[in-house]
Image 1 (cartoon, rainbow over the protein chains, first blue to last red):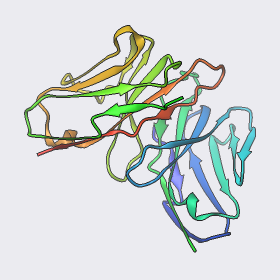
Image 2 (cartoon, chains in turn blue, brown; image 1 turned 30 degrees about the vertical axis):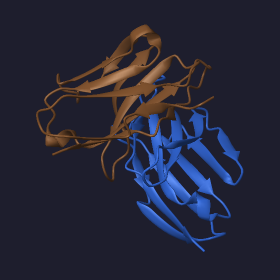
Image 3 (cartoon, each protein chain N blue to C red; image 1 turned 90 degrees about the horizontal axis):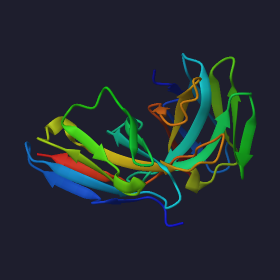
Length: 112
Length: 115
């Protein structure tokens, strides 16, 4: 079951904040976040495991609500380099540890 | 760490021809994955190797697709009798053994155009 991402697209001015959500209809073991720029490979951002932990580096952080099967990616004080399409990839609660099911992505545009 | 590499980066072929793509994972990674991505969509899982063993193949993958990973190093993905619907970006990713997380690192992809 493909996770649902929202919003589909967001436009920011440099320095503004954004939240991208990822929801699944099935129980999850982990959520993986990636950013992909046009014509390039997806770049790994972070993994969150069930347990509701929150992770972050620089000004990008994420949370995982296991009970709601939802994850959110938080981008604060956005920079031009944050522009791209953000994908969440989910792994089922069986902990297959290999197959990710990706959402359709959220296109983030950061303008000067 | 040189990252995941894929070859070729672009392939244009005529319908009905066979094509083969190569993926070289990060050297210490024992898991290798193939995904397919079309415009406006996220990567879609195709198949997965642990060392040289192919452990799962997506039901979406027809018999025209085959993948190998001899000796647990590089992998090849072959598509026989290509169809226009096969046009997509084919992504390879690899991951290591660190428990309990297995970050997948993607290569630059091979863009296939079937005319």
